[in-house]
Image (cartoon, rainbow, N blue to C red):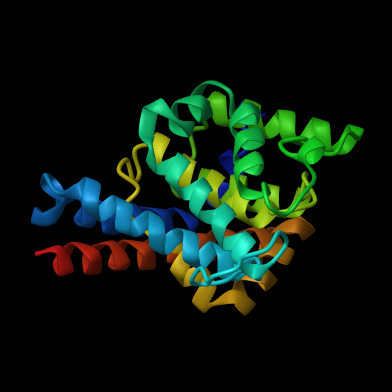
Length: 249
């Protein structure tokens, strides 16, 4: 019996290869000459694109307009931008917290994402029921235990589990995608956050939602489809990173 509950996922058909392709693609993006020293500006642009795409996936706006009101599409985007800024901030913000205390980081992500979408007493507070509490604790244990599976697989699991649980009841998609980004950063897969897989998920939103339902089903086929889609998104996100770097010169 394996001590790593995620280990069997790395053996699913095509997963190891897809994860390695994603890793190689992100590595190429990091080695682009514009990212050797100028990566902070490119990471900021990646974070902005990620926030906009994540907002759209949750029914939010792509651009802020004048006269935003709580609960509006602009409010979703505003939350996504706050989340993106916090994740991009590095060790001084949520990246460091995620390494030490993932549940604390998730609470903070929700407080930022849902500030204009939920009542103050609901911010950062997941549902209090045995299943949600148990699954969140297990997820945090997996993150802090440094699973042996490739980082793209871990990111897919964190993302998919949070979408499935929807622990907060508002802005759960924003939180799930931000948590996946934290995994790619803290694992060293994408240490500067240059990739933008969110754009792929936005453009393939039907496939994204169908694959998320497959993950929630817990079947081997469903898990495989979700992880492979996540790896494709990371690969496409690396191409987006290269485009940003090329535009930067």
